Image (cartoon, rainbow, N blue to C red; front, side, top):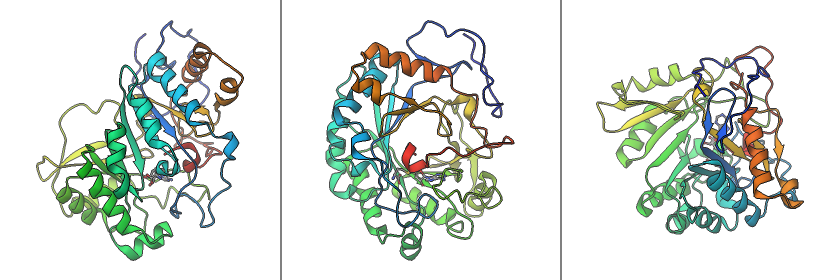
Length: 352
Ligand code: SAM
């Protein structure tokens, strides 16, 4: 099958009529192959970032709907051993709120072939847990940090926890998680004056900074294209403090475009999901904490794996459902198309 290089996302529903090739891999009808599984461990979070969820939180998933550790381990095994997934990222909600996360990581790390295992976290409590997570098999980590100012952190996350996050970051590095990445969302008039200080902090500490454009995935539906800080604006801000040069080498399926900072070796990335979509190179498949499969963050449909699992489906049947879901993956997220509709689930319930 020939890989089609896609530019901007195209019309949803415009699926190729060609039959699915007979391969165990998670191919889609546009020639992409999903090898990176994002697993949400919970929809709950211990922060209340203003751009993600309301102060009072959300109506959380009923416990009975959430996959048990055993169910999760089984789906991850099918993904890795039968479907060719090579990279796992645990996320949420806040994944460290999941009791038993070390056991889930250890089970994944025991698979053959062993997947690369990472986690996206707000790092609260990580100072006490980083070593155990590393020992369980966690390879690398992404820590979300939008500001270095304590007052601003409290305002933005509605919790006074900046010191915990900074301690967690340091503990991740000490534990040997590598790389330690920092994810930052800049919000206009809130923290968009911190691009340079955040990069200075990350370079000084050996953390790899990635700015993420704000996407229409908030529970409050408050995202505004006019208000969002674009990749171009982020780069302009960074160039007031640093010389940026494109980092040599192919980007592949990596979501970040990367620049060397002052000649390197440090670099900075910008994930321009809205203004420079990279859907044509997407290699991701997603599993929610309640066992719903999604081919895209912005999918309008999900495939229920929980009920078949609980009704006794075989691994082969689960793998078949997974392959069918990914075969039907759309060409792109369509954020920039007329008629785009935000998915019903917010980012925190899909897994960011
Ligand atoms: N709780 C974990 C954390 O804080 O990293 C994992 C989940 S959180 C939803 C994952 C990432 O999504 C965070 O870096 C957060 O800043 C980002 N995020 C949340 N809402 C977003 C949005 N609307 N657009 C872009 N990124 C968003």
